[in-house]
Length: 370
Image (cartoon, rainbow, N blue to C red; front, top):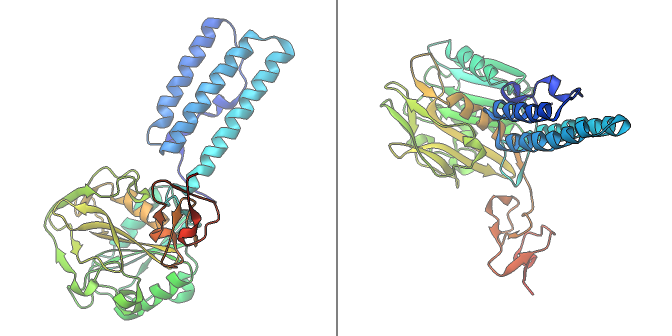
């Protein structure tokens, strides 16, 4: 079940009910009111919801105008059509929301239950993150595990769709946690690693084991080479501004002591956004047909300390993105000469060529235009 919070842009229920209409002046007022509802609806709404609702408002206003001009059975029929149109298009818009956290070539697996794995001398960091993620309305379950006192078992991890991992000190068993995360990802779980869990500046601070070994392809940053910074910084260049990872992310600033990881990108990781200082801020990648995400800010949050801006929105996006499933075939119009089984390295057919819809992973899908 998709648990997206639609409160800011849900139409009032009365908008779906047939109404009595009088004069043409009333019709004009009705259209004006519909436009006002659209202005309220689009505040904070995803683009596809905004566009669809605007289309709903326009078409139903036309139908209502016809209804006012009609009489008897004809009027009732037009009103029923108006009601059915509103319901059908809004349902379609809500269904479209399922894919907003994934790239176009991927599908969204369920991500409604999340485990926050943290470790710190401040035991409130986990509960603070839990409250923040709950406030997004995107998850039905958000639980917390304090890894300063132990390591979640495989069976515990398996009950969640995705996990957020961050910490700064007192990690109980770095190698065991890394091994469990790798196995969890292999079994379909989404994993988002944030600072300073991806920085080995202190021996017991970062994830180790199978997850952190560059040869295994899980980590998108070289944890062993990571350094810790606590200088002030903020959101810089957006290298992929249309990425679903950045939906709703307009600002972010780390105050002094807003710790962050600075580490080289590995395993074909792609930098989605940078800090203003130039180091990676958000990094995405792929292992097999599964997406990976790394964030470099310390996800610990206390009001008035650490970071400000749209960090919670970014974490929500990252958790959802971690559950995207890439197609094993290239999209029509793209080809792949490597034989790899994910769409992330598909290339567009050259100019003057088109593609049939076979999805074959080689250049034979590209045919010369007649």
